[in-house]
Length: 322
Image (cartoon, rainbow, N blue to C red; front, side, top):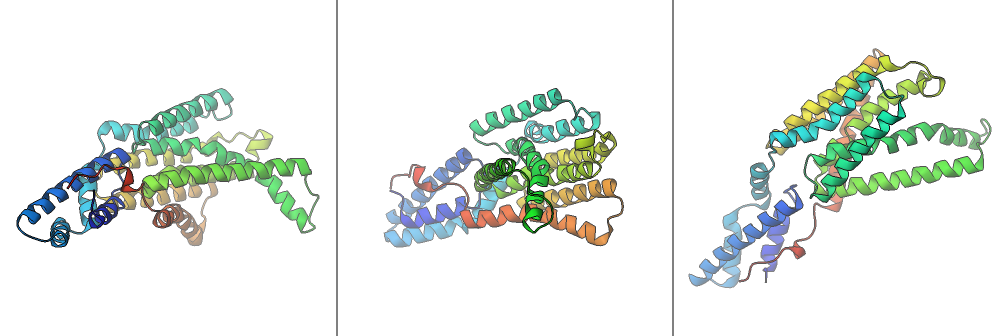
C-alpha cells in the first residue's frame, strides 16, 4: 500500500501539474515507483521505515518544484496541436469578415462543427486544444442571454414603478432560460477549471470581444431593425485572429507564467482594440475598465481553482507495492 506520507506528497505534486488526467496518472505512478524503490534501498541500508520515507521524499525536492519541472517537460504541444487550438478563432474571424452572420445556415453549420469537435475532444481525454473550441460552443448561450436582457430590464424597471411589467409568461420563460444558462456555463466552467484554470480563461477569452460587438450592434439597432452592421465586423475579426495567433504561442510555450502573461496581455489588448474601433476614443478610464474586465476573466477561474482544487484524488491510481 502507498504510505500516507508518500500519498500526501504525490497529491501535492499533482495539484500543481495541470496536465491531462491520463498523463498525470502516468507521471504520478512513475514517481510513486521511484519513491518506493528509494525507500526500499534505504530500508536495506538499515534505516527505519519513517526515516527512509522522510529522506526519500526530501531527496525528491519540493512538490511544487517537481510539478513545475514535470509540467514544463510535458506541456509543450505540437504544431498540429497549435493548429487545432487556433483553428476555431480563425473560423470565427472568417465568419465575421465574410459577413454571413445574417444567414442562419452558415451559423448553424459552423456551430455544428464547434459542437462536434468539442464533443470529440471531451471524449478523447480533454486535450489542451479542446478548450478554444468549447468556448465558441458557449457563445449562443451568451448571445441568447444578451438578446433577452431587455425583458429582464423592463421587469426590473416596472418593479420600481417605471413602465409596464412584461407578460408573466414571457418573464418566466426568460428567467428559466437564464437559470439554465447560468447552470450550464458554471457546470462546464468548473469542470474545465478542475482540469486547468488557465485553459478555462482561454476558453472564455472570446466572450468579452464578441460581447462588445453585440452591445454596439444592438445599440445601432442592427439586431432588430435590419441596419447593415457589416462594417462593425472587421475589428472583431482582427481581434479573433490575434487570439488565434496567441493560441499558437500559448500551446508552444513551456513556462506557465509566460503562458498566463501572454494570454492576459493579448486578451486585454484585443478587447480594448475592438472597443476603440467600435466606440471611438473611450478615454483612459474606459480603457482601464476594459482591462479590468479582461483581468477578471482570468482571476475568477484562478480563485475558483484555489477553492475547488485541481484534478481528482490519487485513490484511483494503483499504488506500487512495498
